[in-house]
Image (cartoon, rainbow, N blue to C red; front, side):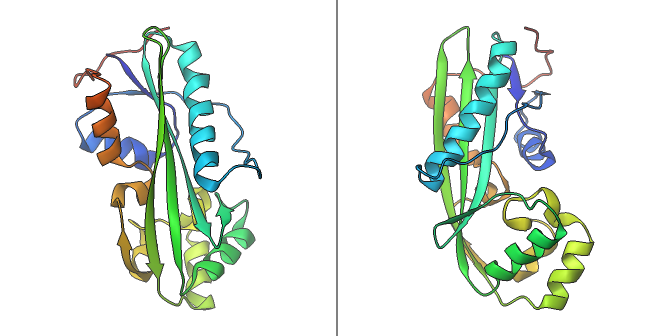
Length: 198
């Protein structure tokens, strides 16, 4: 089955490549708007499903995978920072605290009428981060396309005291859950490169 990653995230692409999965990339044009009436997990799944559906409609013969990762602290959802100042504020709030990382994952395949979605949750414990450290990290640019303004596999890893749950979920795509879903749905993912066509 031909496979599309509906995401511009280089981290998700890297995880799929490391798993040996060959895929095309199509970036969905979907606003990541959260519904205050839904839980954080429901919001992440909703956005992921919208992304998957947007691409799947244009490529009905291909299996489309999408994901949306958020950071949750005291019930508040943190998406990607809008600017350096919002990144500083996010990191300041996360300093010295435990937070939740939720990734909503969705798959869609129009031709076989598959629509699947779920989410994974992990907890991350952060050490105290000084304002000087935050300023340096933000100036390096790494936080700007990351939920919660940090990358656990990047420079922010030094502030992580520990985590529970899937590590790849914290990066942006829970591979354990994805592999299980592919198996349970009976999907045969091509491991050689194939061009997806509509």
